[in-house]
Length: 219
Image 1 (tube, helix red, strand yellow):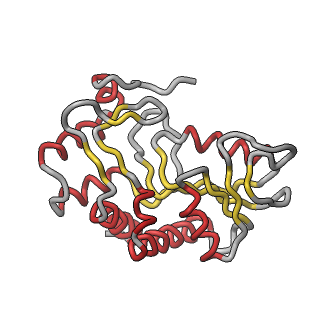
Image 2 (cartoon, one colour):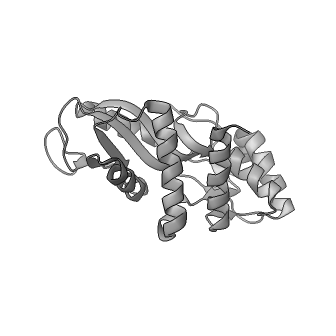
């Protein structure tokens, strides 16, 4: 097993062990903001309440960021409103970098109307969030940074579901597949719901359509 896979599996174990995975085998499924229906919801932000788990998850994330982009590549960390902010804040603090928060909507005037904090034009920036389903909101956040004249070097999320057709792929610490594998290996989830989640992961579009969600991203 490679170091990258080991880190992803350790992160999945942390998430499962701290009750951040929610499932629904009956009744209405979860509906993501983009319209996908799902039998599983991973609440990564729950980990902010567990100091040791939070610290280890962040260390694994920083190691992945450094390995992917280089240790001295960034001038700025940009956290996505709202769930990405505590994680981005901790990463910025550990790396000794400035932090800004990218807002979903502008609240002020001028070049930095869509931000809390400040940065100079041309700042080499890492966009950071807790998770992504299909990546569409990250495109919006990235566009805000570029409109404010940041040089966006990369986008990073702790968890990328990585199963939805047409999704924007981002650099991530782990995917839903890692959670499924660790849950199966360590009996974290009931067998019936795990089988349903596997069916979902194999064809998220069809599963979502059968359960009242979208089956494809709209332009």
